[in-house]
Image 1 (cartoon, rainbow, N blue to C red):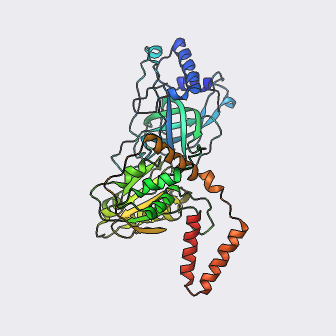
Image 2 (cartoon, helix red, strand yellow):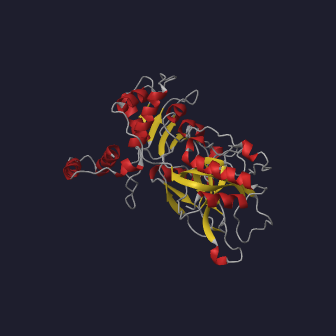
Length: 451
């Protein structure tokens, strides 16, 4: 990463408006203060003004733009050998991220230092760059990174940077004379969001199971165990040609609810939780897979951050109906995301690119799901759940973060004695004449639960 002072000077140069030497010195001092005290940095929003320091917890939605060329501060503009490259991509706020999961911040007041600046926020609407159902308001920005940066699509990062504005990247054959301006963030620091978690209390699992059991009516410890597995699921091993190990899709078959009671309860535990109410109009009108026109990538509903809890409600499908080609493709995309943990990115002149995802799926409805699930459980949801303290919720969240993260999933090892015992049991079941398919299905389910 370039030194912060150089990034500040580049951002000033690329921002419309006059900045006096005193204002530049004040901005440099504030940047250094903010990097030392990240708790003072406000979140990026539509009201963020140019040259303000912000934090943006972002999903990288479009990572396919070519690198941009820039001139370092103090370089000779006539000497092309001094040009440098920076990574640029489109980032949006993380779909479904809960307020409690975002870093709390107190906005520092530096308005006095910038009282003379006539810089207005430039947050033009960028066509077809929102990752959710149409009509949902989302914040997005071009992200400019001054280091060797090669992220994968749908990865999530915590970014601290300076707000600016920049033209949207376009293809060479674009007919527009002037590309539209979009908000931009010159990154000062870029950190993956999923990191190490603090160890949870030893009693956290038992208390969490008790809380999850109260979600059902009557309280159901067996259902709580399966729901906990779904909240901890994480693809860890991806055998070639087979579904990954570590996933666990749960299908809750329950009477039609009068209101959405499951989402708020699980959203209190999951940093990112997205409701997907399946209806025929949604399947026919929306795009579940991201799609590129060759120059820019348009998002799909399934382009979600790793670890997102996907709550699929199938009641809206009713008695069913005719599905056109778009609806069938969307259902296939949802099936692939749940079963194979992949999302197909559609590009011109090719069959698409399968990008790995890490979603947790809980599917609910009045009947058995259309989607492949590892367990189907008839339940009734409770109308209310006993309130727990914020301290208790924090303990639950720490437990889920510790045991549901990528590092924990990758750390599992199977002793030789256990592997031998599993193999012997499988052979015995097949010899007992229970049926090959049934024995294999039980083995796969046990391996997923054990994982």
